[in-house]
Each structure stands twice: as C-alpha cells, then as structure tokens.
Image (tube, rainbow, N blue to C red):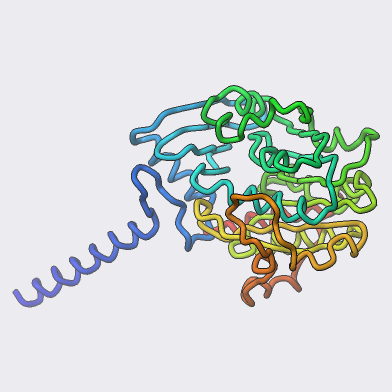
Length: 335
C-alpha cells in the first residue's frame, strides 16, 4: 500500500509539473496564445498557436490562398497576421518590430526624401516611414498583390497601418523585388528590406551577396539600407551570416536587435551603407518620432549578450553559387 501511495504521489507531482510546463509553453492572455519564449522551434509553435486560436472564439478578417502563400488575418483580443501559418505580427506589439526596423535608419540618414520598401505589404513599416515630413516619395514593392489588397481594404488593418496606402507619396509595385531592382531607377536615401525569413532555397536567394550589392547601387551617396535578419538568440548563425553576407557585398554594417514579445524572442536587424561615415556613431543616436516603443537613445539596441556573439565568427557567406542560408535556418529551427 505504501509503495502504491508513493507511486501515486510521484505521478501526481509529475502530472502537476507537466501541467505547469504546458502552461509555461502556452502563456495565455484572454484568448491569445503567446509564442513560448524558450523555444528554438518558433515555426512549430506558430502553427500550434494558430490552431488553438481557430479552435476558439475568433473573427476571420481575411483568408486567402494567393499565388504565393496562405494568408490568414484574424482577430481575437488582438489582430494577428499569419502567412503559411507563421506569425507575422500581433497588433499588441507589432509597433516594436516596425519601429526598430524603420526609425534607427530614418533618424540617421539626413533628411530622407526617397524611400524604397522591399516587402512589407501589410503597410506597417510604411506607416512608420510616413511619419517623416521630409519624405516626398515612397516605392513599396511586394510580390503578393493579395497582401496589398488586404492592407488597403480590411478595416482593421487599414486602421492599424493608418491608411498608409492612401498617402499621395506612396507608389506600390506588385512584382518580384529582383525584377524591380533589374531596371534603372532614381536613387533612394533609405531602403528597407522586410523579406520573409530564408526558410527555403528560393527565399535564401533574397539574402545573397549579389542581391545586397545590387541594392547598394540604388542608394544615394549618404544613403543606407536596413534588413530584417531573424533572431540573434534563436538563429544566431542565420543572423550573423546575413550580416557577414552584406559585408562581403562591400558595405559597412551595424547590427542591432530588440525584444518582440509576440515572437517570443529577440529579433535582429542589420543597417548597411556604402561608406562608413554614413553610420558613424549611430549607437548614440536619439530617435525622433513620438510616441514610440523604442528608447530615446538607441545604444542598448546595439549591445549583445556574449552568448549571442559566440557564433559571429562562424558566420557564413550566402551567394548565388553557394546558397546555404536556408540550410542554416532549418538546422537552427530543428527540435
């Protein structure tokens, strides 16, 4: 009897621990399931969280299988966009990501007038760019016209992006970024690269040294570009390899990051310029727009923990003749 009681007690403790572990991995805020913060398998958890949300009370705002991806925009206590079942943003904290993507470069480049956005069909990065009165012209290039249609017509998303696509300064181009970059164009003061993560060999072609070198030719003398580059915490090899690839294209690079809670992790970016002086002392920059989620002084964003720096020396070069970034991505996303 004592042995049986001991086993029951042990099983009870294990069940309690399993329940706690499950709760830790699915932190709930009302109906919203937040991506677990301790997982290197965010792709899996994104799909799980989407299934949980769709099984509960929610509102479908937009759902379409486009020529390029499955698009799901839904509302629970927040508005969430999933592309191919992968979380792209939550309205709870999307401004953290988009402010970090846009404001450091827009505040550093002097009087940016012409801006190019590659990707960003939801209009949220565009919203941040349009806060700058110096901006006279924006070209936004997105492969998927369904994304832009959604961003222009779904009221909840139009409210979120502040009707950005209806601004007279904005010109949209539904085409492949590489196709757009193959044609001569006027130069840009700022280029914002908001491509999908390099999860496949095809997506890996968006992060080659050749393409970064091509993008650099579209910059003005004092211009710069910024590239979203995944997580230095969960995918450090991917993150530092993107930075290394940009450097191999002949550019000066500054790396930074910020915490995005709905992603459940740290998220990183690289700013690059043809000349080093363009990015001089960017760490000491004060960001202009307000209100904002960013600190007024940007220096904390450019500081990394030692464990996040460890794989910097292992960074690889992703080129058209040696596409390897998607392999790094898959390896770092494995269980």
